Length: 440
Image (cartoon, rainbow, N blue to C red; front, side, top):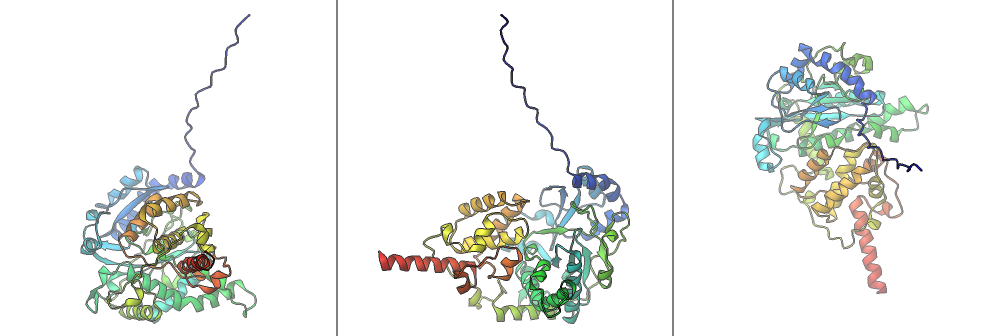
């Protein structure tokens, strides 16, 4: 009788993942697009004194890096680069930057910064409305020269160049106040333009002019997380991985006329993103923003050591278990798809304020990121933790609008009594301790 042979398990061959449709689409045009001399020149010119980092569809290149020649752009493309990103900060020598540098060392290298406003929305029409409103407000505030470019997806990037800002205010060097002052400026602009934004979006989205569309306005607020140390944004005329469109520069007076077809990579008209700003033309805007910040206690740091209201005061939490987290934080920790960078900013500051140590914080945030779809790049999370750990903790954003904007605000009864997620944990601990003392 013939012995029955056992079927040996076949060795499973490792299959290479197929390229996505989006990746195939953009890779078909990168070589032709970035080989154009005018594209190389406009990207290279903008890179002066900036840290530059190529993106290879999903992952980013090494940092720090900079462009030495126009031809560097196409050489990187031949190695697989699909887009180019750069810093808001201007550096004496970008290649000298190190993650080990402290604040004083970075200030020594930094020669300035541009104010970049990132208007992003699910709807390009909303982004157009907000861009026009912000331009009107900036012009009203004395800033006549503002650059505008398409983000490559559904929003716009706006730039108030470094030359427009005063180099010193009350003995404080403006260049050293990054990211504090740009964040204050962005919050100030958001606050002052909010009523007009709601009014205009209501006209667009609601047939009843007496019903204000407060929720829709939250879809187009600038992303404050863009303003952070060594954060990168898409360079003018760089391609966008998801759309394969070009981040084209737009005449600020023609934003309403902009159509996605105008960002066709092979029909793009070359224009300068940085306007010819007058020296110091943004001084009134900056002074008004700093005054507003003092009055409303929104300032992170304005260089005034006498300002006690924004100084960190230790908070002693005896029970930091998840049952004491506010609903918004619990919701974020389940994983989200939109607003991940804003959520990360809130999580870092929330957990630092309640006493979470660095190792525990890192473990928590990396675990949270695994639940996000899509995930944030690990390097981004690492850089945000590193920056935060070097500084005193600050309060996370206050309740309602910020958390409503990322779809995680589901208040319970206790939420009605607090203004910040940290206050929620404090009250929970107080209630728990009182219960123990009363019934122990």
